[in-house]
Length: 66
Length: 66
DNA sequence: TCATTTTGTCAAATTTATTTTACATTTTGT
DNA sequence: ACAAAATGTAAAATAAATTTGACAAAATGA
Image 1 (cartoon, rainbow over the protein chains, first blue to last red):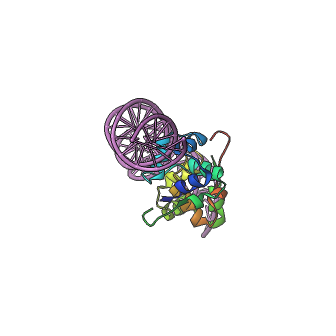
Image 2: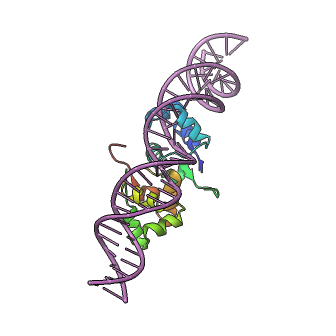
Image 3: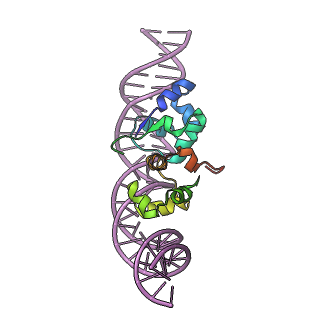
């Protein structure tokens, strides 16, 4: 699964730590999530989408391998 | 987190087993997911949304406790 | 009613997500 | 160039998701 977390952070001018605090996870969760090392839960996806004011599909995208 | 999986299954006339096969998970995953016993991964949420032709937010909704 | 399908549930095993702590590397601003 | 902030990364521990197999209960249709 691909994601555009880094882009959304840039748009909203947030550091990984800022974002982590806003959705109540650790900074490492943001960091590894952002680099595609694992698939986040739907709760996290919804929280991010709400925070950034976009649909989940605009941040997370399925790949062939999913 | 709340979900409307059962409703979408009814609309598309799919059994839990049908749906499980379509998104490549076990039937128990659908069953426990549907009854809110755990939070599915974002990959599963995206697959369901795509299958049902609706945004993720129309199937999964955050609650106060999330 | 009877047979079949569908759903609920449970326990154990496995895989995957998430946290915590810690440190190295890179970037940013002055 | 320097200090501070931000990011990358790693290992160990814990929590949570997902699978498998199996069986009981409920719903469906002939």
